[in-house]
Image (cartoon, rainbow, N blue to C red; front, top):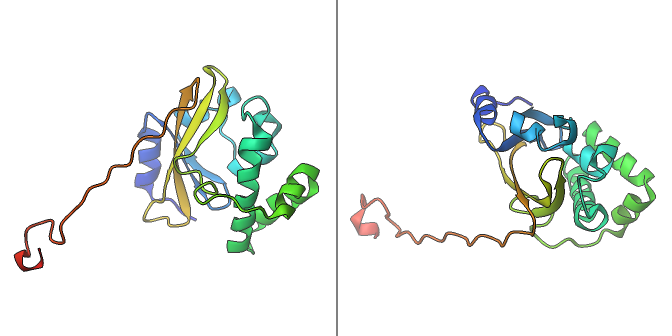
Amino acid sequence: MSIPGHWVQTVQELPQAAYICDYAGNVLVHNKAAANMFPGRRMPKNTIHYMLFDKARIGVITDWETAWAPIIVPTLRALRAQYPKNSTLRWLEDMCLADPFLRSLHLQRQAVPVGLTHPDGDYRPYHHHELGPGWIKSSVSTPLMAPTASLFLLSFHPGERPAPQPEVVVETPTDFTGFFPAAA
């Protein structure tokens, strides 16, 4: 996988925590603000591994058994089905199946509400090493020139879970440019 240079530069220039990873959770590029979200200011090499197995997550990822693992395990299972030959995903799934708690989540094959298997717009409890307890929000997008990569923008909100922001709905006419009056 390759990430266009302008995306690397954009991520590094953003003041907000940002990183790009491949579909297997391997971090390809990140900025300093993203690294600052983690203890020791060290960005994990693989986000799925960090969220499920890395001991550094203890005390950082809060409510792991109820707010994180039940969402990440089905995500991993779905990624394995989509990319069955990927060795990183196979390795992560093997580790998942070796852990009694994660194995039970994997084998339950419970339905996860639509929208919760992808972190876009999701708030999860998080204990920031400098700012204390709060919520981390992920906004996720896909760079056009790297369609199997994901750009993550992270926001930390101390204290109580923030209320969701209302959606912006814009109604546009068929010919919003006014160029084709007959189409309007």
